[in-house]
Image 1 (cartoon, rainbow, N blue to C red):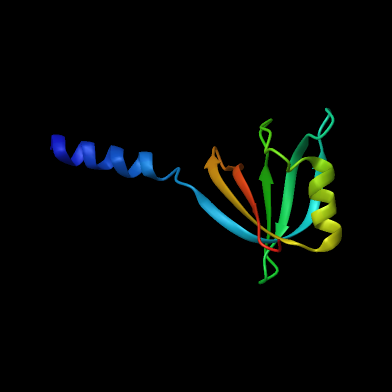
Image 2 (spheres, helix red, strand yellow; image 1 turned 120 degrees about the vertical axis):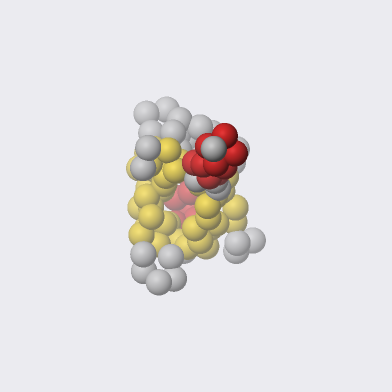
Amino acid sequence: MKRIFIFMLLIIACSGSIQSVEGTISGLKKGDNIGDFIYIEIESKSGKKEKLYSNGKSFGHYTYDHLVSHQLSNDKLKIDYSVDSGKKLIESIHEHNH
């Protein structure tokens, strides 16, 4: 019985693993501070839109203005994210067009 309990805990703990989405930026909400953004909305090839939140984190040169330039250029991005309480939180951002 103890092993089953430990196994179930491991399954629950792994459910918050990192996932990825690839696509172009269809929306972007600016944060209060220079360079900050609140969320990125990514549209995949299939037309599905995903809203991913920065959760107050900084992502190096991926500032609000830099992301707008990718949006205007229709560049493809890959965003790694985790899910916390149903909210998709960005872990990292990667460019695919450079």
